[in-house]
Image (cartoon, rainbow, N blue to C red; front, side):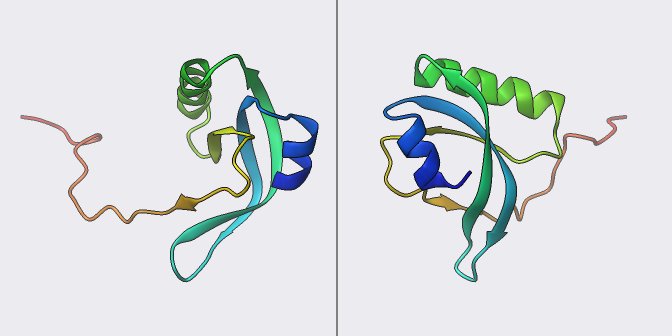
Length: 91
């Protein structure tokens, strides 16, 4: 489904979605071309928790939590320039 189809089918709802097809524009905006509904949620807090659960279970998949009242999705990629310590070994 695309975003307009999702908005029409799930009006005024919090959802966790997965990007099945997506690309990034030259200005770092993420365009979600094809989406799948993963979970319907009662509120934003639940949507965030479900998003974290799915992301932890499937870290290589592209999940988002969104509200369908938004006419357009404005998702920007941010480049991480720092040093990641998540996998570092401490001595």
